[in-house]
Length: 197
Image (cartoon, rainbow, N blue to C red; front, side, top):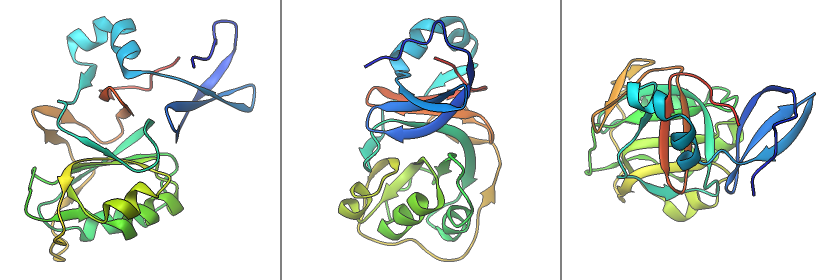
């Protein structure tokens, strides 16, 4: 389902998730429309060519109830330690997406069911983990979009080591705090700015 927005005065794109759709606001009212990543790549080919829109490699598995989500990026760099993950998810999400560079570690999980529920309760639209999650059934019950490399039953360390709001590199793609992320069944896009329908 695609929203027809050619004659509408868009006040701004509202991040969110709802199965395969995104929310946008027109004259103070919220509507659902789709911003498919494939279509975004096609209609913004020049931005893709110069790197203003980047496509993350197709290495992530889909979890959570939201199959499509978007929002401003909050970056976090950690390694096998999720103290800062919890710390950020305890703040108001306000439609943002937490992007965690866990170094691609496959030795423990950085996000579990409790953190998935916390993300939902605090208003985060999504979490992308360059690493593992656990409590998959619990996360799949949360109204949040989650992407991760895999699941792993072991929990992470609790040392509080890492860096918040720093540039991160996931599989060769540089991501800055404050950029925009768009995810759906086709993949994940990182954009320097907010995209419109």
